Image: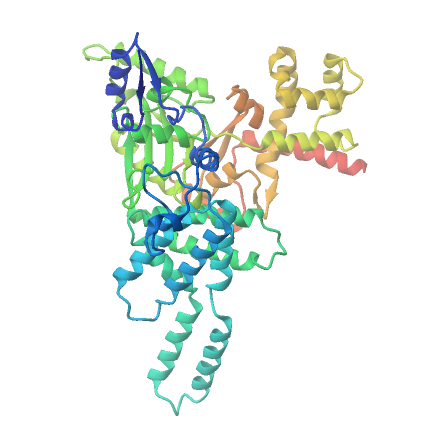
Length: 569
């Protein structure tokens, strides 16, 4: 016999109950509902699910809202809630209805209409917007940005009136000037700011605005720079960012530690949002929140079930140079703790005396709509304080960070070398590599090996490439800049926080992802707590990167090679 088990109820199980449930049904044949999201995706599933919903909708029978006899003031007019009714895809007519509703709501701005009526209409607008497919959402957002921002004519008129009052200040009442200034300030505030305030008051309204900004950023990324709607869309994005920055200031955030006993829904989201080292299965996830590990998240009171930033930390007796080093440190400390005389230790006990270092090996922002709002740096600072309280002997804090785009940058350098700009390898290195590869098309063969990660399976080639790749990586991290700051986004994040570019680690992450991103190289950004403020100011104000002698020496060797090539030109 086969049973259909919908997973919607399982989301509330704790991991222990979940595993007991799985054991209890072993040996029986069950058919699980297809909407169970898989573990180890490494990416958030909302977009994928939406695409699946769209396909399902487009293949289903359509019943128009007119046939249902619904009123346009009812959210179900836009977003039917009947379980027996499958929603149809949105149309251009639906987009126009939502635009008309927007115009109707904004007309209430300077009236005495009850806030209850306004928020009811705003709730309908939010439901209607969610109903729209992406092309219709984009059209709505462009109208919102272009037609409901600042009335420039009214601003100019109010400014001229204020200037006139100031010129005749001796003859006018100061109150008139203050009223003129207040009127000008109101006119300089986009109309949609008032709308966003009402949206934020709704249940799940803040989450709606975060998702709305995600859509705005997507529209901007797809637009041509010469599009007349570009500047209004950028202003809309700026307004949303400023508003969300206030609502998501650190004082409003809650720090939570995620453990194996946390709600299953939170554990599932931790898995889905992990962007650095994808979670493979439940066992992998249990290890990441278990012995000698810490997983901390920031949440917001208006989004209590949504982690905003996730920080994975490994506790160790030293700063680990690789992912394998983190795992081996846990095993090593567990053995040391078990060997302590006179101390009862079981498999779930940590020995605080073994913990001397904390390694931040993954930090992920989960909400695209909060891009540009600093949360990760505050989370690291807060976690440092928590760990110092829990483990008094901890005096070493460091990241073990990926270098996401190093290989792509290196491939561009190899293409340039193939065209006659060989500032990648020394002459001796080229000869050794040619001798080993035994090919007439040296650069093409080398590019192919990096493209397929085939070089990593050749032990001789791994040895030959270590020196030049480490030198190139130091050049990329320390010398390559964007607007004066580090080209690499991860480096820029930690350097802004006041960390030191401390150590490059060869073959630190030999997973396909690690090889594909950075040829397996990872970097430790070390936080010397007494110097973080000074380092941060030096980087932000003078674009000065604080690095260890080891990193600087590698970078200087790369610079000498570049200058040698330039002098020959």
